[in-house]
Image (tube, rainbow over all chains, first blue to last red; front, side, top):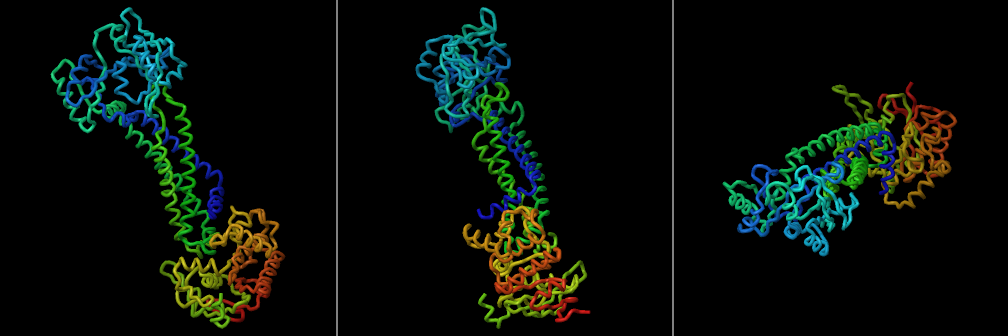
Length: 384
Length: 235
């Protein structure tokens, strides 16, 4: 600790240079934080709750529907505990920008298969009793200022009503919370029986199934049995673990992990060069001073520690400020207005970011530290 | 340094020292078979023209460099055999340096500059402050303790440099042209101070200079020319 004023004073030597370097590190870590949030939004949300779930969709495409009577057939397959279906409604509220997910579901099946959605018992009761009832995640309820008892119009370009018109009115009977931060609390769910009777077109069709297996270790085996069950039928299916399905959905946009890693790789490589150059310059400028320190008894190891501490302080400060700013931005919620409902920086990304900042500090300080260590005192003193 | 008694009052002993610098394939003999004894408590002036090897000799005595041949002992301890880490610890304990261009840290104020050698000791913050304040008082700069080098005159900066050199109460004070960058008046002030440190505090001082006015303040002057010593200036 007693050496801290000496290290700190060196950072204050060229304030503008230190500030600009700090700023560039900060920007890199803001980017790191936000890209982590984007990656989480695409691939996250499949927590431990999803370990025993399979998603079953039409073999050709997710947009093709499956018969509702597949539910009973699936539940007869050995290893299947429960099957619950959802259908993409694709609606918006008042303005096309107010896009969020809505699906018709069977309330008890749905809440049983998704225990991460927390709904009060009286609200579940009301949902069972209200055909036009809908439950909505707290984030959307707060965003649109909805409360229980409200009637909300949702306009959909996909599902017209029998009587005509593409705006459906639902009664808000419940507001659910997510058990975890990664749980989506923006969606809206309403009753399938109401939907099935009220929409134009063929009855008894659903979008996809979520199947709960009895033993998560046998998921792959059960998925194969489900696929086999519907082979050579009018609507063949593809069953896969929920995480894999989420990943393949995200991959429709590209390999999100690869994209974010590539961008961050380029950014951090640039920062490594920028900060490394700054540190090298900073050490070269005070060759004479390092010589004085060595002359009065500081060891080579101590000089190395000073230089590394200086680069680490700079990198860690930039890292913490950058991650902090990214966290503040991400706390503002989904910046896309509905495309990324689970937009937040996962704690593991913050820890990883901190670790990267330390590694960055060590990497950028290493070369100048070695230079400083090799400095011969008599030679260095002549450069004062 | 109790070893002084074992060496018959000789603090610094330079025996048969040669120093050769290599520049490419060329060998430059800076010091040749040089012998020098400096008794404890002496104020020795080391004179000679530029390039005569004065600073090189001072660096060898201060453990900043190693001789190519021969030995350098201070207080009975041979420096040429010490490992780098032990040599650094030895410097911290036994030597104070005063440089021609003061060599202060521009980012630290006077008291922080003076405190630097004390950071290598186990003294508490309060004890370090006490030592710093005493050293600044000796050099007459207590009132400028919070000032940064850029706000001090050359003479004041050199006083800070001397305070840094004596703050650990070293056995030996090595001064490399301490008045070389100062005007006569400020230089005289520094020489008065060095003389007082030698006479009143018993400090052994070796001062490199090429100013006869400065060397006149020393108790003995030796001349160095072409890497060899003589008692009289070389014509």
